[in-house]
Image (cartoon, rainbow, N blue to C red; front, side):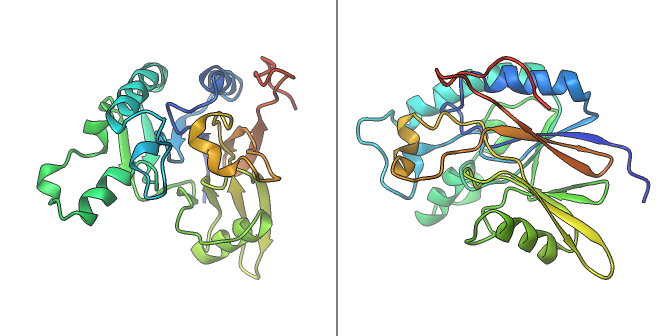
Length: 238
């Protein structure tokens, strides 16, 4: 298969709880790697107030959170007018709530409508580019690091890029008699100190910030290095 694309993979942002330097970091990666296509690996917005789990009673209402998210999304739309996004658990929260309470789909907006996205944004269950599959990862079940990465490649029968698992990032290869495949967790770009992530405050592992680039089918993890104040150092490394 002739592979020709350079794909920039925007990781979990969970807006409006994204890292303050997330957009500037991604723009630096875009300038460095000059992608031909952009994939958003899901969880563009957090929807904390619509979670099936307990939400912070002192946090924003669902309406306030969404208004803030839309404001934060606008510069992303400006800089990235054409993006292939994959469906994920956080952005699907309104639809799960509607299903739970018996609200027919006729009464619901689709992804592009409720996120006020430009025409160049689209949402699919997964995307395949140059033989590599891109999906969010929320249906992969439990596991950690290499276990999840190799399992998803083996189950899909092809190299797979995913997100969802914030405390994991990196590339793991698996070889079969027929092919060499990889599983690639692109990390996230969340502000883990925000109240939306209080559920993980006691965890020993911290989110790994960064993003992914796949050039002609070859993956690269680009870490986002922070200074002592928790801000991006302002340059790419490696």
